[in-house]
Image (cartoon, rainbow, N blue to C red; front, side):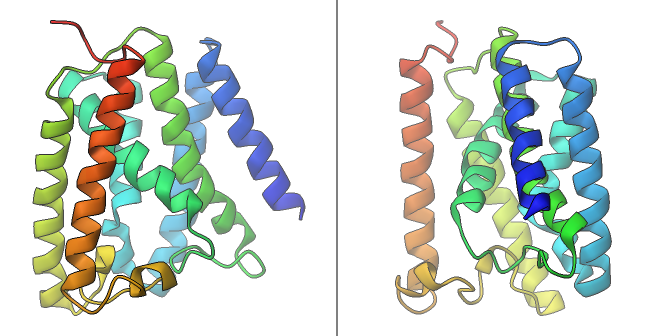
Length: 210
């Protein structure tokens, strides 16, 4: 119970520091991302190295790069990846790719920090005054589709199921029907979610006014 509590408190501290624009919070976020990549990377290498290409790993690496060198378009891609993949992953329980808490507690903590730390980083960027361009959703969507296309080919070559493109791995996805129907439903849900993010960011004035 202590590991989940500590993970929650660390995540809460990251969000609080990001919202308050504390000067040292960027180092805490960087440390959390590095810890997450190391502990979950070690777990993935032991059990299935192909999972290193999972979207949350890519997103965490992008976040680490952005924390050292800010780039507008990369930030926009990162923002949508985080508030789609990372946020929704935290809502899925149990998660089939999450290391088991009982046997891999450090990797378990890393798995959740790998999703909460990038979320906190977006809060920090927004608090610092960074904003999205009006076409950010479209840029992020094209990048996501390109990534999904690459993963689809990768799955066929290496007999994997990254992004659940070949068969569903969680119960709620199984309710959407067989392949390829559940894939199409997921795509439609992703489009809807991107639109919701765009609408919310526009309402909160996180999008630049041209």
